[in-house]
Image (cartoon, rainbow, N blue to C red; front, side, top):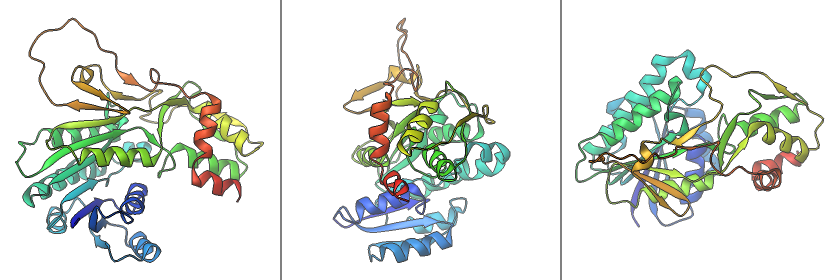
Length: 322
């Protein structure tokens, strides 16, 4: 097929995962990587050394630049964002400029260039948000799903929890602390988080591009764990003498996360492995109460299941043999 894929924030964890997945397939004739990181683009170009890849420097805050880069594009995966909760708490306006205004620029660039499919990557922190990152991602979703959709562009979102071994996620933090013979810093003993492998998130993003309509949010059905149990399993895997240190909640942090609100569950359709939340208005009153889908109520991985999941990660295998 002669499709062109554009990945915003394409030098990050998701961008690299997209490239590894789609360079080997015939789905896309060209993959455009858009980011503001010159050195990472240069490294990717040398590492992959593939004529399918094109690199474009720029920032999604620059409407003119992203509109230019979207010309001739069929599919966009919008991954560019400010994602670190503490950093976003300390730089609210910068987060707004990237996560809200930048996303608006991507949406409008896709529409003006008649891009067939735009999928925006969101997060569980957008649900009942209490921090800047979550609030800006929630508004990004509202922008995406509130567009008067043109016939030419399908716009949908994908929500996910903690994607293992992506930038800023908890597993590489714990692994680095173990390798440096430091205590593992757990913020709250009862804190739970959804866990999913990056390959699972890519599959869900790919499913979203097959939808021939706009206005849906795709949510992966994911298991969860207590982070203190995750720390204990990693200590066991590495046969480490590191201890666990409880350090307290960081600014803007929750003890558990939610992927679907009670209100959204009224319009959510369940499929094998994922939900699709449809944008529609409930036109009648109902006394039925729907439970939210959160990291306390989902399947909890036991230590054996968690150990198997962690040991399946190539980064862990590499770190063990370090």
